[in-house]
Length: 115
Image (cartoon, rainbow, N blue to C red; front, top):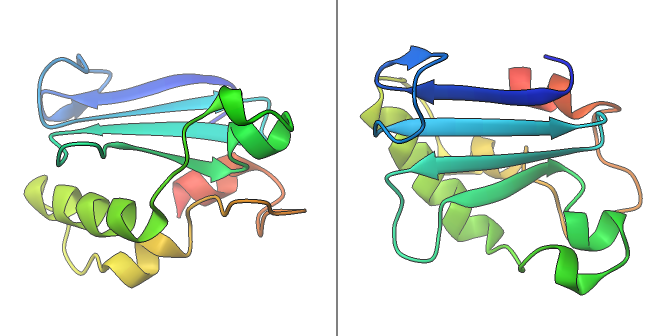
């Protein structure tokens, strides 16, 4: 993947994030990936891979707290909406950036995003 923003919208990679359902993955130096997806339930639609920005930068103002269980459930529903099969929240949950983690499971968030 590399650094940059990757968008799925209008049914294709490289589409417009305004065309729902959409998915945007912004990779930052292999340490943090911000994942935004729409449609999403109120208050949900964003999670992180690797580190949460608030932990990586040691500054709570860098990102809002993430309800990992709710995001995993909502993202699994989103995946089914776009035609994925056999996507369970418990599997999604294992990929999300934990709060206060010393080191994520994968060395680079690109590895996590590919899973």
